[in-house]
Length: 238
Image (cartoon, rainbow, N blue to C red; front, side, top):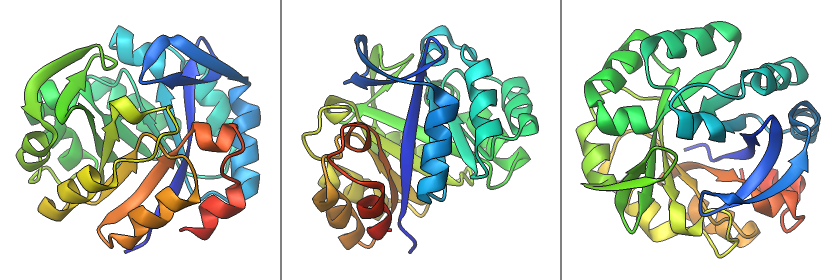
């Protein structure tokens, strides 16, 4: 199985930011989206992972101009999540050049819509499963329900999603280490490729994920921005 490192570009107010545990009040600003996209492109990353944070809370796209700037600045395929809640938005982003959209809250709250989108656009829809203590969180991680990450994964196993992105919210942006065990356990139960997210602190995390032989990739944020992990190290683990 290929193991793909996805550098993250999180958008808030048109700028690149990193949050701690998804808390919008704890945002560190890193600058211009197009400049960051170009840097990741030139470093050789095969994909870019973009999240419209404002859109995730608003339930509709909120950083469209920044996303379009990223698309103009890179030759790499871009996957995008945040505020994608209906088929019209899915179609609009795919039509604009996004290679893969990520359905998070929409998938958890309306699995039938997720299945419809996956079948309408094969290979172009991923499911975001964001978990706090194992339970799925939605609405920009502001709400946590009673559905477990595994429950949602199994529920959507028949959807034909390109991938499932599993985020451990409590580790996200904290540089405390990725939750290898929970991600591997989810991947073990599913046939859909699973991508890890949340808490990557360095190369050891990437090596541990890859060593499972079950995890298809990892999303890397603050570790890259803070220099704890170089692009060369990240790509070397792929």
